[in-house]
Amino acid sequence: MVSGTLNELTSDLAPLRAAIEEQLNRFTSAHEGCPERLTSAIRYSVLAPGKRLRPLLCLLACEAVSGDWKAALPAACAIEFIHVYSLIHDDLPAMDDDTLRRGRPCCHIQFDEATAILAGDSLQMLAVQVICQELAAQPARESLRILSEAAGRGKLVGGQQDDLAAEGRFGPVDMLGLEPLEFLKSIHRRKTSALIEASLQLGGVAGGATLDHLRSLSAYGAAIGLAFQIVDDCLDVESTAEQLGKKTRKDSELGKLTYPSLLGLESSRALAEQLVSEALAAVAVFKDRGERLTQLAQFVIERKV
Image 1 (cartoon, rainbow, N blue to C red):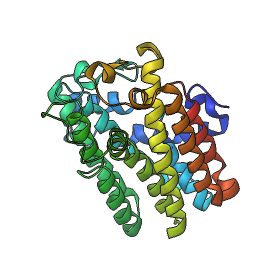
Image 2 (image 1 turned 90 degrees about the vertical axis):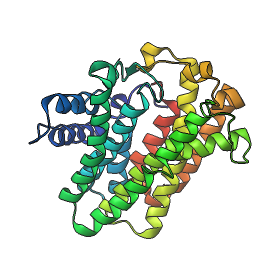
Image 3 (image 1 turned 30 degrees about the vertical axis):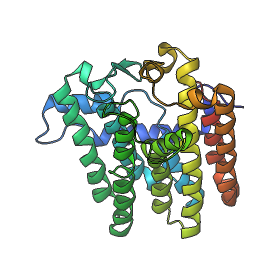
Image 4 (image 1 turned 120 degrees about the vertical axis):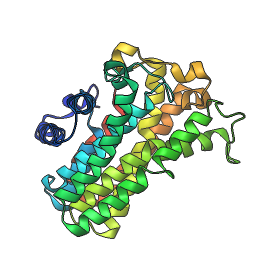
């Protein structure tokens, strides 16, 4: 069993994390025409201590198909930029109205709302820029397709819209004709799981994956993406704000659907374990090269933060 933070998961991930941090730092450094305050807000949000789950998955997917993860570093940074942009915008008063993120004041608290919006906008375009300037034409084209679809209106953004609707903000909740559990899954397959699945696909593209291998990586990503959200909902009930680095129990206060509210903690954990088992089966095809993907899947179910 593994527990704690990704730093404790296994020491051999340290070089990957160091490479990710180095490139995130490089890509967010001062840029001609970018005001200093905006640069500061971007770097404050991107370089804050985080799990780096998505970029790590991207690198390990590349490793699983090719044996060398370095080719996926630009894509790994791009997916993290999209993830951080989504966090900045989700925390805004008009969205989730949070004040704490990764154990620190949210971007709009540390700076101001307008700067936070612009920082998020900048990170979307930075993700595109990095892929275009760092990857060859064909991988760049396919990577942009994957990224734009995962971060767009039908997935990340659409999932956030339905998540807001689930709070009753726009009147009675339209559950699209689905039962509550399936409606909740449909939100999180888009809002959370889509970017995680995209991380695996981007790593596969960078490593020259076959279509069958891309399907295996997608199945793995979809399963652990949903498992990650289920565990997140459980931790929101079981943990303190100090432990998670963000406010807890806010969803229950708003009356939002969560896995524990629908299934209870024990059944929610069981569902997450089932999904992780599906993820492990999907990447068994990679044998030894997929070992670290297996470790990360186990981390998802055992994590405490």
